[in-house]
Length: 68
Image 1 (tube, one colour):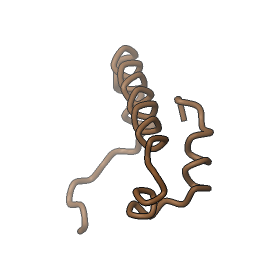
Image 2 (cartoon, rainbow, N blue to C red):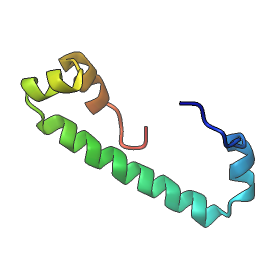
Image 3 (spheres, one colour):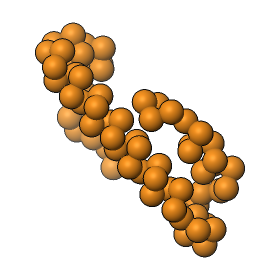
Image 4 (cartoon, rainbow, N blue to C red):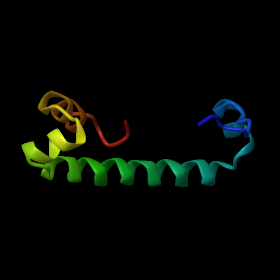
């Protein structure tokens, strides 16, 4: 499905957003990363296969710091 809305480049958006809003968005993103990686760590091999994720991909994702 093709998007009909035009998006501005992210660099343009960050210039117009206030600092506190960018900081809040970063904190939310970091929390989401941490939460989803905890959920990924709990999956067994059958659930990983159902999701189409290999063990190597999981280990690679779990090795990342929360801010990435």
